[in-house]
Image (cartoon, rainbow, N blue to C red; front, side):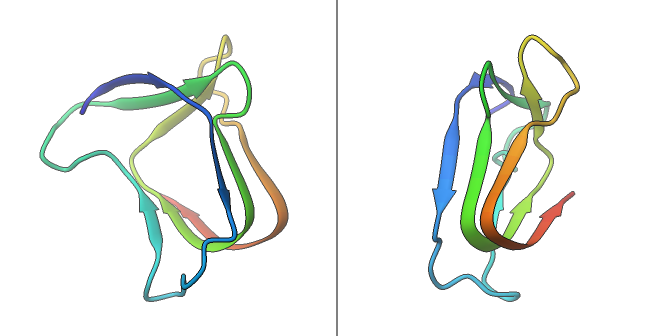
Length: 82
């Protein structure tokens, strides 16, 4: 659903992902409008994972709008932002 969500998430060792079997983070396509994911810390941390797509999400670190704050830790490969 459109709106602003204040959350922190960490994705660790997502097993079974590949070029053809990806993990996609995106708003529900049944709704229109902007989805903002923000946090006063790190909104998204990726650790030991690959083949992740971040699609149509605005990720912010508060109070700094427009600053994308994603931490990549350890082995992280094939991450795409659309």
